[in-house]
Length: 310
Image (tube, rainbow, N blue to C red; front, side, top):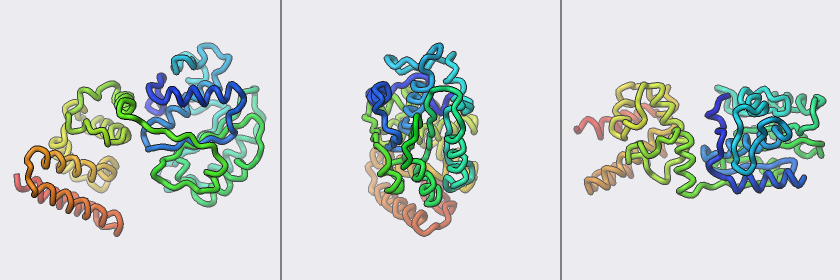
């Protein structure tokens, strides 16, 4: 775990965390809460700030609720950063796994059964709760239905994916949305304040903050400077490397790049050809996804139709 998981200063959702923190102060925080919203907007960040606030209480350099800042010298912060805090149990999707499995829930129950060394609450954080399968959901449900003393469950959920109704029914939901100003703040948080240096190709209010995190990782891995990247040279780099099937960034974002590229062409050249190409590649991508067709063929078709004519 590192600082990219949660920032020391909260730039968005300050009203939300202050409201939830006040519920805790007034002993009205529900045992199980669900943070739901678009993936990548900072829900997990808010969860960690809330956990820092709860677990660092009465410590030196405790969480500052008035500024929503974490002190880097705080004991709780450093334990959470290394995922070794004895009062937190983190459940997330393991590498190369499609679901959160029942074994992870069994380990959580063992954690809940261990006597706490302090009077502080035990907190279970489930990041990516949409990956709970039927077995793990049913096992978790039994714990959620118990009236546990000094225990809190925080579930983080991608609103675009399904979560079992039975799990939802046991949670008090907090829905998170970003307005345009806060979206830019969140992107700046991810890019270390480099949003203004980005190419105008990527300054689109509809692009998810998650894309920028993936773009930054792609640039770092491929020795590219993110402030020098535009759609043309990014696509050229992707097509030159020919690792379409293996590269996670390409698999997840190539269709978005195709859309942005063709929208740019339509706006710049006012040529109906690009409008029809956009319509065509959108339908082709739907077919690739729906019928599990060869993704590499889709990429190569785009390359042949767009780049070979240059």
